[in-house]
Length: 181
Image (cartoon, rainbow, N blue to C red; front, side, top):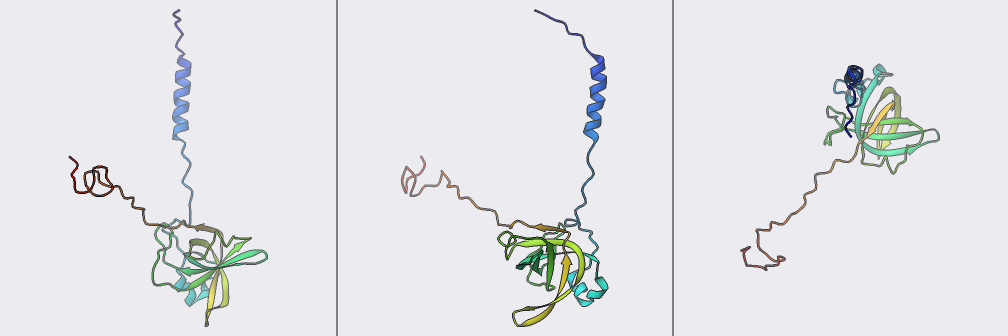
């Protein structure tokens, strides 16, 4: 049974431009201040020298979590500052400009926001708080966190040992000392 179906020019002229338009609609890139390499906030060392001059200035700082303190309505995270890569990831460096406190609304689980994890925060600098690290008295700068990223641990790639079948040795069915042939 051979049926000749009529070719619908209307479908071709309607669906092709519609498909082309849908394919061209690309959402604009979402601005992510954490990954913004052109972020214009002051570094921690500069803000520590004159904290009153930078109150309510937005900052992008990161580092390694040293302590998590959950309070009734918020969580304070003490961060040992580290310089940031262009994408916002804290570099593990020997030098640090000091420590700062990141103030988060609500509860953060200390098992997830664990000591030693890398974090980057963005928000306004809202003040200073006296503190102590061991016997050393210090003043922490406080950031009210608007955006943050808890970074996954960077691990070196795993090396999987694959034995060479052309190398002879113990553990191969043809025994030690005998070649492949």
